[in-house]
Image (cartoon, rainbow, N blue to C red; front, side):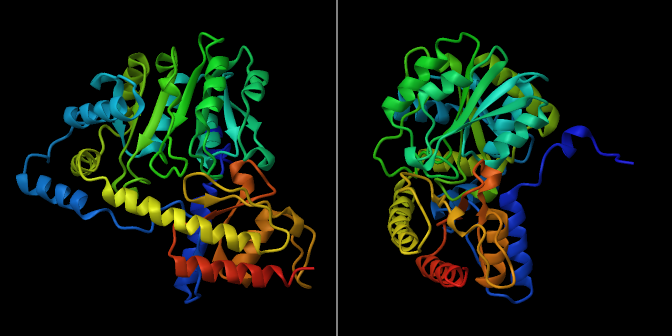
Length: 398
């Protein structure tokens, strides 16, 4: 007898976390695995942010429950940030601070969706979009951008996917897993489609906003008429190397923020008081450590791109943000090392883990079964060694 709910049976374990767990298992056995599977900065949280958290502890004022939607001064700082950076004006009661951007998205999905509703997901997509839509008992509708268009969906594709059941659209820019960044012109065209449909909302995941190599981060909420139709998701994990602090947030129409606040009040209440004080320092303090990290990511991008191009049969786009490559590896499907035949990206990732001791994530979990995701949030030394191992291993397939 299956005693679990239909909703939990309908989703898979996170592929990124599953591959990271396998890599840890190998490492525990003493195997020298280079893990390029997790989307986690390899930098430490900047010192001034950590010092801000220590100061908050020493002050002794932050040991009681914070407001469910986050401390007022932090929400006001987020308001100021979006006014400054995107030209979008919010009020503090339109901000909800959560336990990471993943909870922010979950709050929104559970607050908005009913069975039968549809959510358009730009594909390739971050693995949890699909799962969270289905946990909310709605239906994901995938609109795919191919490698020939830098993995980006067009406005025409979006318009063709909208039905009477479409409740929302979700995408990320810069994108996990492809590193693609939507231009102002591309977002403006998508916004024009959304504005034709009065009840349609867009969920814009901007968690990688700082890791953008184009010189321009555009928020779709900034276009005329779009602020009331957009739910921005953001957080501190990627741009400030604060993955473990677990602080994310939404900027949204007040009715959505109120609903997300209500949902969070029943699920977790507020997130850590001290993590919020650290986030406050991150948002209002020196941005130079972030800029230095981004500069290093850009160097790594060039290294990995050159090394990927040097591997026969691999096709890779040139990502404009985040810290991922999403190469097409389908030319290796059907090949064998004499013992193992590679049928798909899942097989290839497991084979590379065994034969090259490099951990990647199969692309099927992100919506493209021909690809794998490689995170370059690792040292230059590890990246060069990992790509050398991959090239050597793949040369043994025929």
